[in-house]
Length: 263
Image (cartoon, rainbow, N blue to C red; front, side, top):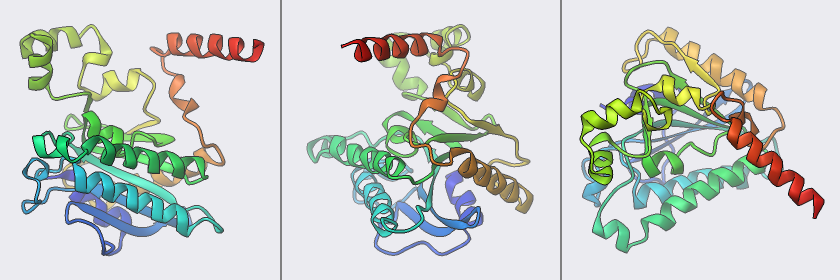
């Protein structure tokens, strides 16, 4: 079962908006006394693209995400910017010949662009990881958020690709990859390793990450509201550079800044 399906109703508290594919749920609700748009990619057994029937982000999903976010930006152009919350449980982007031929790279790039434009326009953008956040699916849905919040649960995993695919690409066994992951945090799938990279704003404990209780919902909503306040008027992603393993990134950026200013 897709976890986003279980979390979205309680978090958003309203009906899904019409005009989107069945694999995309878009709900307008309230968060921290302001309008908020909650978005989730979910499974659709009748998806016309078979590779996208289990919650993957494919052509319909990429363009749908771009539409959902862009419409919010346009609607709020002259008013308070609503919060945008990406509820994330995505196992992968949709791999397939049809997807490649029809331009999945453009669909996912459109979603990324929409999220980035929303952030730069002043919308607080939050990514809530409730399950898997894998590969290009995560890049398209949620990775542009100013604040990333993850449920502290073994079922929450982040990586560039699934273990079996990573093993094939690197010509290693899954067991060999797991051994390397114990020493190299970017290769690991567990949340603790990902958190050590400094990309998470908060790890949040809940009683049941797969089937949230009313208390779990209230706890997460309170954390989302806190994230909105913490974002404030900021529009960049500088908060991701504070982790213990980001020192090289900080040094490179500082040297680039010095060189740029010295030109």
